[in-house]
Image (cartoon, rainbow, N blue to C red):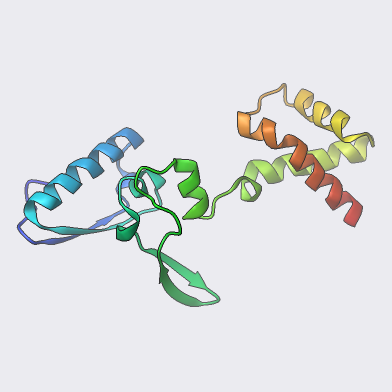
Length: 157
């Protein structure tokens, strides 16, 4: 960053690809200070909520493709200092029900139910037992909901 010139414009492509999370936050902090000092600007392409939470909403532009049309939108929430999970959901559209583990568990619950029909609570416990209780807090909290989704899917068939 010693080569950043006065009033320069810099393009940085996905800094998260070469920095660990704590270093990425530190990089953004130093970059902001250098850019302000040099009256320079940067365009940063990222898929990292860590980068977003270091930048205010007014400086974030989201590029989207909607029905084949490309557009630029602003975040609906303030990004600076925001929770990483909130940023993943609101800006990148990543939520639990679109995750791989959600679909995996739903499929396993359907399999368990087909093996032996039972009540929801029993099905939840069988799923917990089958995986030895190796669930993160979110998966454990969502398991009853995932079970409801699986049972609804079975009823639709």
